[in-house]
Image (tube, rainbow, N blue to C red; front, side, top):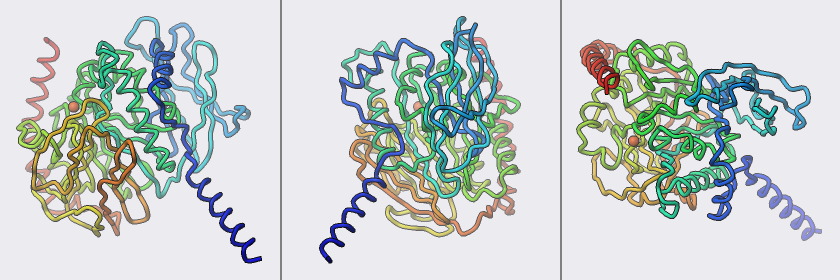
Length: 471
Ligand SMILES: [Fe+2]
């Protein structure tokens, strides 16, 4: 009898394990020939949708291209796979980068947590196939960070490791590893350089190919490569886009809220200090109860790799951004650009306030951790030393990913290899209160002093805008 019970219990445990490890995402890893065939079947099209995060956890934004004559910005959402009892959401159409298509954008609202939805969007051939989208917990949840996806231009030889087709496969397979290991990931954070020239349809088409992206909303910062063209404008629909008074062209900041977390996305290709500060002030004012404040910028401020010793990052961008981050008491800043994975100690400005050692937990620490992601695209192997780094990964030929696990009072950062999922670095921050100290005397004084930087940033932005206008 004991043996039978043991076998039954063992079987039940195995079943539970296999159920627990079942990926909620349709995110298969693809071998080269499988991916190549998939890529070739889609690369000439221009209709894949972008699923972006919404203004909060109850919303998502969808954006896609459609023939001008037939474009209707409509999305149907149902809890039934046959799309019965669907609710229709209507959005807007705007001009695209070409003469034959329009860009459709729709915001889906009223989503409930831990619910399976099916959605379809209106294409030139009627409704698309229904896609499954599972909302995750609106409280404790996980976010995924992958840096510098930077899908290459199509001109590179296909056999090159950094051709468009091969970077696309790496992108697909890193997502597959991350989402299979973490089926509870709710959305993706990209600190920018999503594309290489920022100027071609095929870069975005390749970026959007992984099937997982029909189910995983993305928050995409603008990087210097994205800014080489205007395509970001036609393939994204970010929430709370902030154009301020002086942004021009592609430049903008945006913010969103998910559960207890406020994300502030900054366009670090713009030196527009007054608008970066104003966006922060507005977002913080509208979200006084957000327990966590997380900044996302493209450039590797307090990062790893060749930002170390780089005057643009260490002087110009640090001067513009760190007083904003510090005086609004951010907990974490996510960066990219250097294609080098690393993580800082707790920082204020460019100074270390206290250690943030790998594997340890810190309760109510002062200062900000800076997480610098590496890249999906070209790899750089550089051994730069900096005292402010608590961790640096020196095998950046391997794409890494980081999960932000918001659990109770804690934020657990875990960085893993994108091929094997092996854990490289982790640190846990515990925050026992949602209170932030942006109104302390020191922080208010910082922002008063920052007016000088705002004035200089304004002049810099005006000159930059003029140069762009006439170049
Ligand atoms: Fe970059």
